[in-house]
Length: 83
Image 1 (tube, one colour):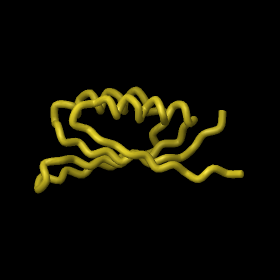
Image 2 (cartoon, one colour; image 1 turned 45 degrees about the vertical axis):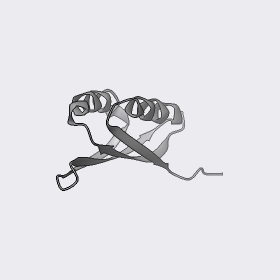
Image 3 (cartoon, rainbow, N blue to C red; image 1 turned 180 degrees about the vertical axis):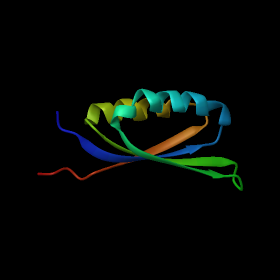
């Protein structure tokens, strides 16, 4: 199956959702290339960047689950489609 590269930017505002987020990311560890987390105490948030290489359906499932978490927002940027 063809895969795509994507970067998922996540902002965590509610610390109580971090454990659920980590559980989701653990479930998708096979698709994750790398992860960087930066605490930003001045604004009371954590910023996480996830690089993935996976089929489009897998990336959509991952971001969909992240999007349902309270106090967590995310956006995804995808690699351009090769023609």
